[in-house]
Image (cartoon, rainbow over all chains, first blue to last red; front, side):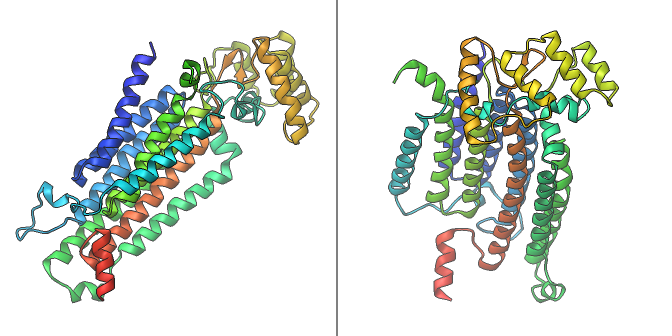
Length: 224
Length: 196
């Protein structure tokens, strides 16, 4: 019964990835990336990881799509006189090099990795090293340590690995500051190129920064 | 290749396919935004690799059901839950296998649980396969319910958040590059650099 759900999801996942690789229009590629993240989140849900699925749906399909669309709107290939944009302004430049070499490298790497999987524990095997070490009785111990907190993932994330999560918050904070510093314009620089275009870009940057600021909060919510 | 092998390893192959698609985008495409998209696909496939490894057959999501009545009461009185509760659990035989009973006992005696030194680990592994032959599980089990491993989920939650941070930074750099060079195509940027 479960196979009727899993097989279509995996096929669509592979199909979406190939479509992203082939499609020329960046706008469409970003949308397909959102679909890809969402399908990945669906598979994670089936694989008993609802917390990761929520976060992937919120962050991968949500925030990262928004960030990419914001970036796209700032980086069209050409800008029309009246300021409006068409969908073919977001096309990639046609490539002259043939894709044979990258394909060859990717195929060889892929087969090397597949050769490596023959030693891997089988899917769902309860004797896989990951299931045996560390001692899985920490699940019942977490009930004692965290006073009956039902979600073990939360117990590990916020309790046993609390410092790690603190470090992760520091990473988000650092990235937010870095984005602000990269996109900031010096006050006199704005006066120097005071043409219409740079004003539009500056306004869009502000919107982008506002997105960045809401990032941290959203991810925190998704985590808990 | 047998059918058994296919069913046991197909998850890795799907992940490898997705990973290689992302890798292809990164090395074959010259548009900077497309490269970031490729990196994102690669990254998500790594998340999926970890999550598939944490799955246990017949397992469920690692959220403890609060169905077991007396355990809830004990958790209410948080002071003397721990050792007493675990002791009672062993006595009541709450479908605890022999191996985990030993582990609980060692926990009661406040000694270290096994699997820290490598030699103990080996002994533990043989004990595990022995337990499996008797159709009992050493896997994450509590009150008779098998849970999939929560650790990959925790690690991947952290990775997703760090991933969006790096993506945001990369996109900000792309916006900056577009302002300076007027293009986001790699070959045009290199040409502009050569001519200047």
